[in-house]
Amino acid sequence: MSFEALTSELAGCTICADRFAATATAHAPKPVIWFASGARVLIAGQAPGLRVHRSGKPFTDPSGDRLRAWMGVAEDVFYDRRRIAIVPMGFCFPGYDAKGSDLPPPKICAQTWRERVMEVLPKVRLTLLIGGYAQNWHLGRAGGVTETVAGWRSHAPDVIPLPHPSWRNTGWLKKNPWFETELLPVLRARVTEVLA
Image (cartoon, rainbow, N blue to C red; front, side, top):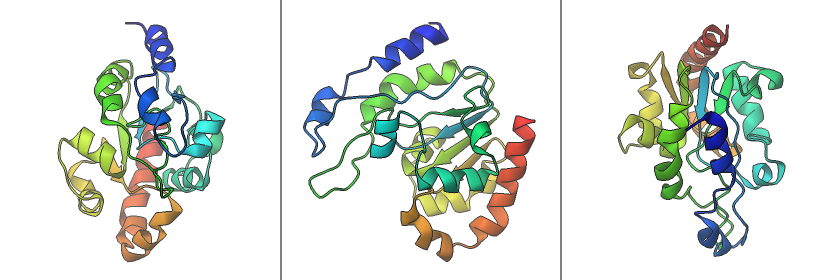
């Protein structure tokens, strides 16, 4: 299947329509597609949030600001699909539960689309695994985020696991200062190398 045919089919995906209609947000599917076949960096995240659902552009929130700072890239580089592919485990906003908490990305999304999308990204040289869903899928294991990120050296230089850049993880960052002093310099250097 061609890149154009795949992205067209993905853009029209409605496999989770009933699931999303039953959430507290009662929204319709709206896949956020942000990749091109020449990308050399893959950001594998969880799923779009409500802001991204509305904007159609990934990481248009404080999490995106933090992630770009971690990577050491400007917005124009970050949003250049030919250089950086942003492919979450769920392409649509999963919605909120009755208490207002984020729902996890539906497993059927990755089961349906992940391998097909990876096939059209043959030039990826660096994969950033953000959060447990992406880490477990790509590394083929179920482990905690702290343990996986702490073991980043065993996956580098081609794969680097990261915590989610959400403000909710500010406490985690304070408890794990090695992340900033040891991992981030390597991450920034590797991103620069791959995008050069």
